[in-house]
Image 1 (spheres, chains in turn red, purple):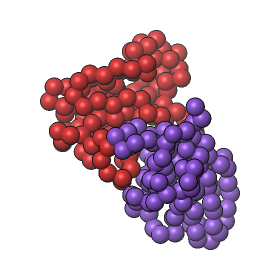
Image 2 (tube, each protein chain N blue to C red):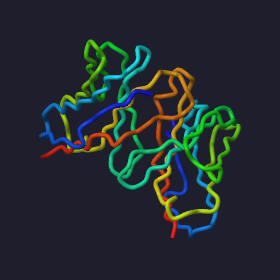
Image 3 (cartoon, rainbow over the protein chains, first blue to last red):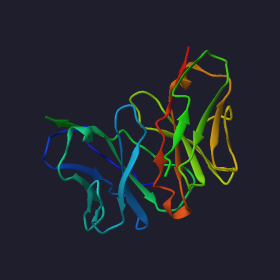
Image 4 (cartoon, chains in turn red, purple):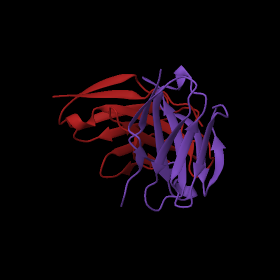
Length: 112
Length: 114
């Protein structure tokens, strides 16, 4: 799996859009970008994934640059409940039985 | 649709003992993965079971073993517990191969080894 780099922590005001960056400069052509988050004392929660097109679901939007070397997870209207550690993971879809590789992620703190 | 459940929620053991943790998969999922999460770290992959067979393993010693049952529920067994085994143990289920990476996690079992 390609290595990812994320900021250690970020703050965002409640009601504003939270933009979480992830660098994955060594991503391969068949690797997808996945995002998970982990709210304190809970298991991780799958958010979204994408290959090269921008993706949106009920939780978030994922913007992947044209060269695919970086991406941004966008929470459009952050609430206090979005305070969590966010993990960016790059991985071949459907390939391998070696589990997800979680780094340290970004600790997002939503301020009231 | 029933989510992933784990039992027990918390457990305290002493060094050298053995422990069994249990997981029920989300309905319709046939793949179960187990992770260990130490305090302040991201989850680390232990192993994965697909249709009752182990089909992937992370960098964990053989004293970490597992089972998957015909109903796709699963157990994680740890023998000869060490102090460093204190962690949150997470179970995750997923569906067909194409969606391996869209895993649904349970709330975890907090294991403390004294």
